[in-house]
Length: 69
Image 1: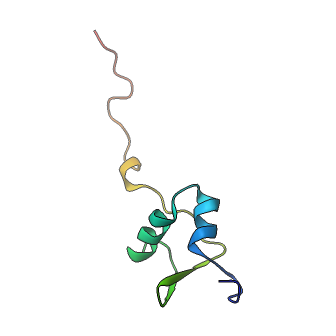
Image 2: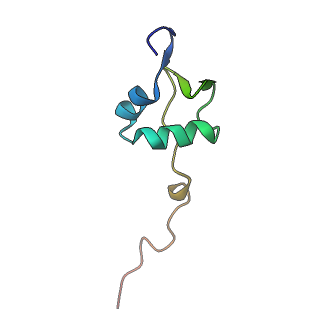
């Protein structure tokens, strides 16, 4: 995707974010990357896009200070 200035490919995003290309594709398909555009079977991701947070880890753990007896 070298022809689109200001955008990166799924492969480049996967290297930057440390996740698989498949995972980045899932982020795009779910609409979790703002302003990502689909061109045929490929995605164009804005260069300044940040990795979406994992919703499993957004809530605080309630038992983090608990000790075992």
